[in-house]
Length: 119
Ligand code: HEC
Image (cartoon, rainbow, N blue to C red; front, side):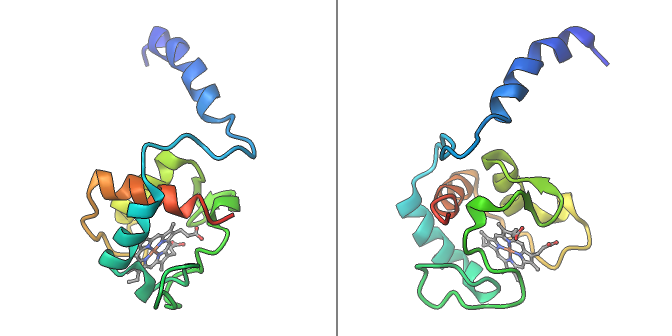
């Protein structure tokens, strides 16, 4: 492992871990995120506040998801990890029932921005 690289990255990791109660800075647009959630049909498996028809129970409710410590029980709940999960849940947990829905990077950022409004 490259020690120099590790040392250089440490401050970045610290910043990423210091979100606290603040809403993290996100590149996404929550209004577009709401539309994307409807378009991808996330609500067929999740209860999602303010999304019409989002009342599925295959997955957990996403109400107050911004307050969750872990995503899917394994990932620290940060915007980066949220995007990672939404785009490729099977890469995180090969046995998860959540399918890869080929969500684009931009849509994943918008969706994440919306989900972080659910506090
Ligand atoms: C076929 C059903 C299904 C669909 C469709 C689906 N999910 Fe999931 N989702 C799940 C399941 C099941 C889990 C629980 C995974 C686990 O804990 O391993 C989950 C977990 C999650 C989590 C973590 C929740 C938590 O409490 O930690 C998020 C966030 C999430 N999904 C977002 C989405 C988004 C956004 C979409 C649409 C792009 C979507 N899901 C579509 C089934 C689905």
